[in-house]
Amino acid sequence: MANQLAVMVFRACATVLLALLIVSSLGALAADEKPPPPTCPVCSHVIAPADSVVVTDFRAPKDTTYCGLFCALKQMAEKYPASRAIAHSPISGNEVRIIRTGARWAIVPTTAVFLILDDPQLPPAQRWRVFDRQARYIQFLSLHRELLKYKPRPTRLPQVIRLLTPPKVGAHP
Image (cartoon, rainbow, N blue to C red):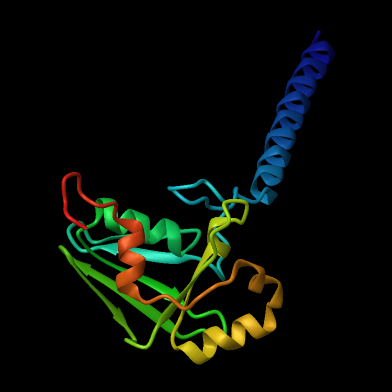
């Protein structure tokens, strides 16, 4: 009888240890899994660090990261009347800041120009780019000659804002 009790206790302990081993190994497997990459709140594309644009809403001091310039500026135009976007010029890596205060928009540096490619087949991050100055824009196009088929022109901030904000109904041109 004592022998049977010892065997039952041994089996129960072995079962508990086996269960703990299984649970801990599952936890280790779950810890090894990478979290899914962050996605853009506008278009749901994956946010690549090199193309990401961070928008700060000054009313609720919070930062939101977008997959590219188009999504970030679209949100600024539609939802954030007091905000700032920080993007990086592809060639130099320099910061370009776009600030919106109500109806007023500004860009720093003031020499910044945009490259806008009108092709919905391209990912959003590749359609719109900003350069800290026109020389970097030209350098980028010389390195990416395949983009010349879109006949790009350097675009300044006022033209970009007009593209983002549709004309008001009944407004005169």
